[in-house]
Length: 119
Image 1 (cartoon, rainbow, N blue to C red):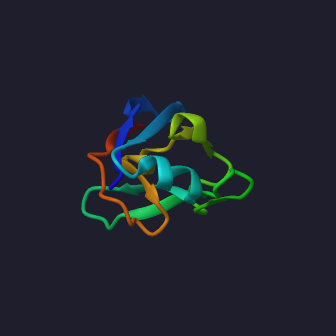
Image 2: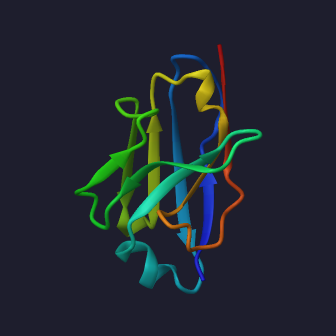
């Protein structure tokens, strides 16, 4: 199994920036993390979890939800078993708990990291 730990969240004003990190560990992470396409998901209060960014195994392909395109950048460092989300020009509607996982969410979900953007 793979354990995921997200960090880097916080409170910012609109227009600000945050960089999220997610590190994998556990018995299966060495065989799973570097061969998997990864994603950042978020869940706002009262809403369903949504996927906001994906990155392919070696980082050559990245896709974004329309709501974050041009503002967020996903990246990964397979040597560190870590995936990142750089969030710029943040908006109040970005307020949510952010999680990393595969695109299909096949691993156990971590605790997430709270991002709060005030206007």
